[in-house]
Image (cartoon, rainbow, N blue to C red):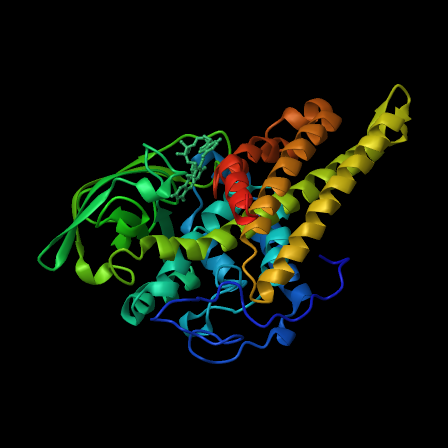
Length: 411
Ligand SMILES: Cc1cc2nc3c(=O)[nH]c(=O)nc-3n(C[C@H](O)[C@H](O)[C@H](O)COP(=O)(O)OP(=O)(O)OC[C@H]3O[C@@H](n4cnc5c(N)ncnc54)[C@H](O)[C@@H]3O)c2cc1C
């Protein structure tokens, strides 16, 4: 971000809720009605703060977190203290309002750790909290959001099921009203922070087939009847991923987010945020890979000459640079449109696909340039290479997003 001109100031924050009755807000306003002063956003300060956190609080411990399979509670407190966890949320819950560019800048700084698991685990509230803030009652928001944004509580979003994740409208977990409680039965798969979340935002079926029968319930992670199994993964090792089983779990009816049948609408509030976030992550990780490749190629000699003097390596580095810059251009263009209050669904889908495909290519080529060193645990490119696949599956698989983009483009 350092080489870009300051972005134009947006009229409307992209996390801001729209088309809801409970939280209707005007442009350029927080959910408490106060104006957001985007001119006051200090991008270098955000980057510096997150970078300091990564170097000081993350890098020395990352390998041990990867081995233990989850992030320690203390790191959430530290991430909150540097402003990372509250970034992009309303002040009334302890958040720090920002626009899409500030989010991208903070993600880029976080990428220096070379760990997508860090991003996924630390920021799992990034997909669990927006539906609640968009549609939930003030009571529920006040009970959950301040603790999460302070780093004292963790959140997870539980939508995907063992029978399928892409087709959200057909989810099977049920919630049946019994007096003043819902009784939840079903299974959720691949849930980030699912093992340790204090609050789960759970997508359930309360009504008829299809999207109109889907609702969201806020469920405490320790409710009786929730079974949890940790899943072993290819990458994102420091982020816990759970299989959750709900066996007659009783949840107060007051924990319903918005109203029955509003679940899909709530989840839609995530789509642009999550996909832009994953595209930013892919771009940031590609930048990290490229930097490591250039450093390596300058220092490594083969057959009596530095690698960087070999034409094939020089051209490869230039090719990778061009691809990464192309992603950055589209990322900034989409961020700018979102900050203008636009909802460029097709462009966000295409951006996410472009960014994740680019990272897959870049990470593969960079591991090749690093040779054996790129295959060894502890090397950033090695970790990033293992983490590329999840980015083109999660947050909407590439094929599903391409289909959605096609429909949005009118064919
Ligand atoms: C590490 C990790 C963390 C995750 N975290 C969470 C989380 O926190 N919360 C949560 O709810 N979910 C989470 N997920 C789940 C993720 O969102 C799903 O894996 C994803 O939505 C795809 O669903 P699926 O795995 O069931 O694949 P399916 O829906 O079964 O699809 C399988 C594959 O089929 C192809 N495909 C699917 N539909 C189409 C189509 N219409 N046309 C062409 N091809 C198609 C795609 O290639 C897709 O990858 C996580 C997944 C992983 C791996």
